[in-house]
Length: 236
Image 1 (cartoon, rainbow, N blue to C red):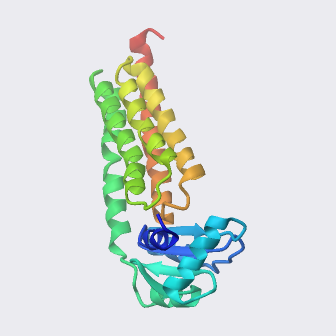
Image 2: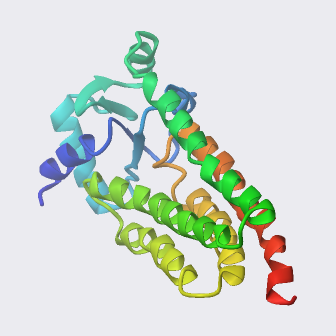
Image 3: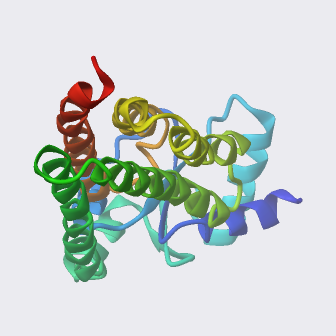
């Protein structure tokens, strides 16, 4: 693909795309985008690489600007930091999505809490129900990154590989005794959140990262709290 076509694809790869140099100071634009709940992408164009120099020339030809950073919103060039901030001040971001995501996310914790209580005060089979729900949700949080990679113009292959790991772990957890499955699932939730922290900080908006942390704590804690109730049944 030519550098011109590549730049156009990159500019359309997220609702907000910021082309910048390795030393660019975003002057708070990244925090503003996170607070607004917008998914955004940073594209670094270091001039030490010949491919990046070609991309920068294509970017200049597209926008008519020879400086960085350059910001695109919904695939359209809006200018530099000042112009992007002005767009945010004018109310460009959609504010309903984070509230809806928070509601649905926290409602999704109710089966975890009910399952943990049920294991302690209800019939033993509730533990299997809790493990099954944990496996489903673990698969779901991995699939989030598959979806993000599909929407990316230049997805990293590693993201596709990693995104199926939670589903495989969830499936494997359902093949072992439930007394083993519960701690395995709890650990998997925590480890997957750690992977997100290490590898997906620039692709996940801040509100979503915070929500994911809270939901991970809730899910892992419920699974961990339920586990000791099974020890007498196992003869441990």
